[in-house]
Image (tube, rainbow, N blue to C red; front, side, top):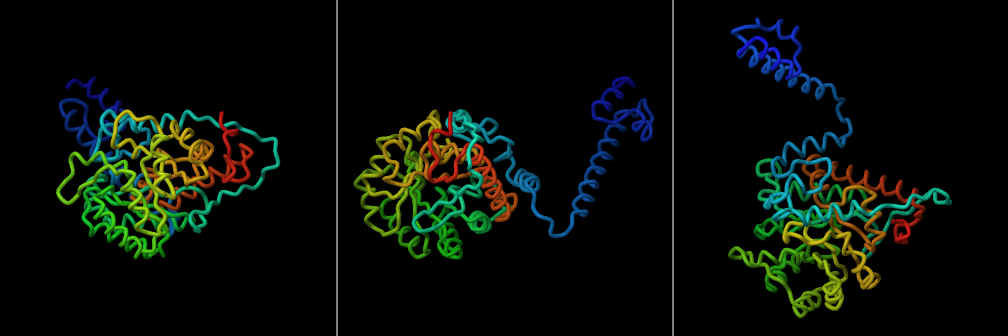
Length: 402
């Protein structure tokens, strides 16, 4: 390598010529020098990070930067913890955190929500706002719940980094700290023992959670309903949007679509409120209502089961027009900001779910990480309510959106 090229390469790495000369002689030793400087830079950087960490006062509050950094280290390459979770970088990565196939359904969730614009209004007397809602006797500080997220090993790649009990503890505990509740998941590949781990956490938090069951056989669903009743959970859900895996079910892990008759059988088998997650059309929202479901979740499973579905924010208004006030409407899909919450509520939701965002909080900071993210969302929601003239989240209407 010539002296000139050696100098150019070093300058590209951000090392000045003066620093380079201090370490090596320019000439035949150029290649060795590059390796030496790279190693030196790496060691200095590592030492600097160590000094910064040691300089932090003990008990210093967890920051968002801490959470995202930790989450990125643990979740990569299953999740890159992008600044905007838009489904682009992880398209097609299933198992993983991406959308299935081209990833377009995931992207459509993000795009549909992003394209909803808010009308800013400041000529009014709204100075304090009420963000609280009540679900089946449980008062929540604001209408955001942690979505059911499971598969810590096969979806999140956390084997050896975070256990199932640590994860569900982080999700449910963080929600409680922020004055709300979370969903406990049922993983498609999880044995019943993992389901029991999640129910133990539900019981620990006095049932302040909603437990999800995969659309398994009726027999398996009934068995899990009895277990949920023992945990004290306030409600249970079936994520019917997982039914597409019926064609490739593993022995003992059968999932299947459900008929109206089967849904009624599930509703009539318990006194617990039943939520049907995975509703994307008006006719199926009406079927859910006919079955006796106490709630529906407008969701395409985060774009992870069927490619080229519309975004949740796109279909929500028509569904709300038909069943609003007759059943609780939850909306799920790329919820990260307080403005996202306000938009979906204006489109007809009674509450919203946040999945990948709070997943990162749990992995990156445990229950404190989840609580921090939820509290930030609530602060953003309060600000956006004031700036749209919305005094009560329960009375938000479409006038606040363009």
